[in-house]
Image 1 (cartoon, rainbow, N blue to C red):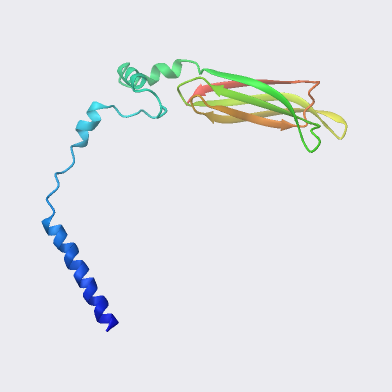
Image 2 (cartoon, rainbow, N blue to C red; image 1 turned 135 degrees about the vertical axis):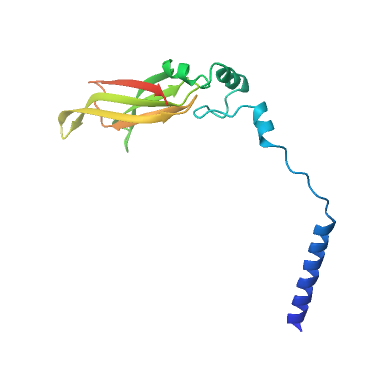
Length: 164
């Protein structure tokens, strides 16, 4: 009995569902995508989604390549800084950090070169390191975090960035 009840209820639901489909009005096809894309140009690759429409239109009007050839020649705009801090269980281990902040509307690829010294088993050792990172517009990143360095000897660093 339960089997026949489930079969009948299934057939009833299928009939009601099919009846709704027959009465539904035909839907008009969506508008052509060419008309929508002609009104607003597509966002070029490498441009942040949050970029203002006015800036996007200005760069598109600057040339057939969307103004990217002129942008590539312009130097990257960024700010770098160093920080010394203390860490470890007793806050007695010096930490050296390089921070880079993008001030550019483009995505940047940055490389940081570090030269400094640290102590290992009572002996002073020199260190050279290179870190590479991608930085998005208006983003601050930590290029590296070096521990155990000798703050009295200091450290030197150089950051170079170029647009992607």
